[in-house]
Image (cartoon, rainbow, N blue to C red):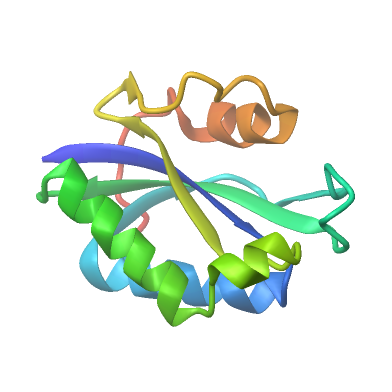
Length: 130
């Protein structure tokens, strides 16, 4: 069984979109832990709205690449487009940060909100929320 930690982010109907993303993720994976939701200010001029950010820990019997494709599919289903990103509107962003304790992004500590969310769940024992 594989363990992944992913970040969810949204600045367009964020409460609804993060909830919907977690529901879709939970259809295919077991969500075993969640961080609190942090609300952050936009980081550059193109983003107009506050972001809601949350880390979740999942268990998966799939390959990493299959999980990435599944998350990209969720992003599209919830309305993420290249045009929206260029206009600063992100219905949902789903990024792997860890896969089986291996950092998938070398910049995970660059953003304080990511580090705070990840640190809340990273080293906790994997137990089911069910």
